[in-house]
Image 1 (cartoon, rainbow, N blue to C red):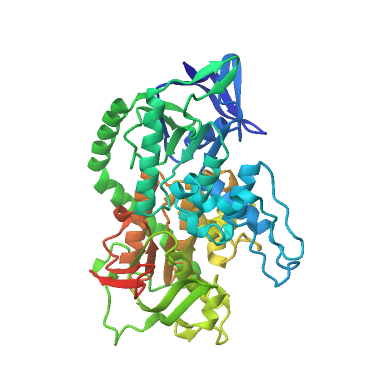
Image 2 (cartoon, one colour):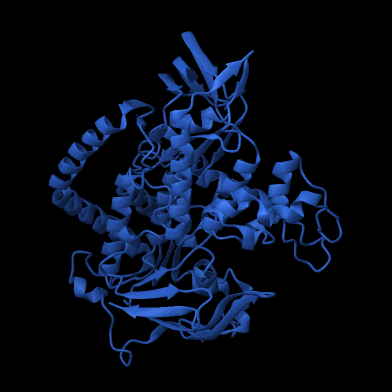
Length: 555
């Protein structure tokens, strides 16, 4: 039985046609993976399935969808849009106490149960909760997603992994019949990925063995009403559930593969073999491009001492503490809100060319730790924290600090989605340490920015809008923005979120080469052990609930 049938159709937004002509159908007994490179059309296809873009038949086309409007999507883009919405609706200046915590997970999920927005007191900011809100801790969907302990936390204060799990839970509670999970494992720790993988397999395997029924035009899923059918979208062919038996690949805004999983895996194996053969020559060309881009930036930054990136890789190692002053020092640092203790008695020092991998489960304090450094957490002023030799609050401005930092984070990504900017303006803003560009760029800045865009594979696209890119392409642009000024410290919070295999490898190569340069010290947060770099010989591992709540590992 056909669940979705698309024959000779196109995908349109409000202004133009994005994908001109394609055909595809989803039948009972099939579990689909949609995959493809950043900007290749996969994200647009998934958006169209859930109604964010329009699927329109061409002259001889046909489009039918038994799921109709009963479709929801959980994606990095939707998570970023949700946080963007929460920040845009912040009314701290009108709320008693001066802090608007916004919607909590409990409020957010209650709205899904009721199918409408909840009212709140305009003075206190307190929401009027329905009776079922008090029982959410025992709900099986809440337990499945592992969010019982964060139900009363504001959405805008959640980590990337926490907001993704909350979105998944809301989608399950909504009763939608088709759920699209786009890159669902990004930002999740190992335990959360395992839970989600098991969930997908259990639901998909049940779907493979049962066919839906249409009775008088009404769609039903027999005894499967507790869980929706699922389409999985991935940037990389990595951690693919066993139940997947069909693959749809988009490249260059058209379908490049549609068929059996086993056939697709054979094609991938051939591609991998070919890529490995070209690896050395591609890396050499990339180094040459990076040197050229860095030379342009060096002129702007007056950095005559920038070393050649093909220089001695030993410069990436640690130096003796007596000869290598600290860039950052934290002494007995404690951070928390009410009874929630995030960081407890943290003692840690960063020295030049000591590249650190930061790891730990979702909600363990990794992002809070980085925000103490970037100045995005005000509790930095109540702790003993020195950055570049000066204690925070001793007179330096946040701009004094940020001009020495390059930052890629979920917070920055959300903030940039709220600013209309071209790709060229985003890169140039890296020289200015601003969110957006508010002054005329010089000819030298423009020339340097174009070099970095070329390095990232965006040559000739400098006038495109940042907001029109796929999430993964946006991430790549923000990484280029962070490194453009050869910062003393490069802070990378899950930099490979949403990146396809090609972009991911290029970014990891870029970070490794920067670490070898002797100019920039790396702080790198990731949940994916395959993204740890050879230069990262120091590990700060957060262990919530233990004493001490962190461990330092030297490799």
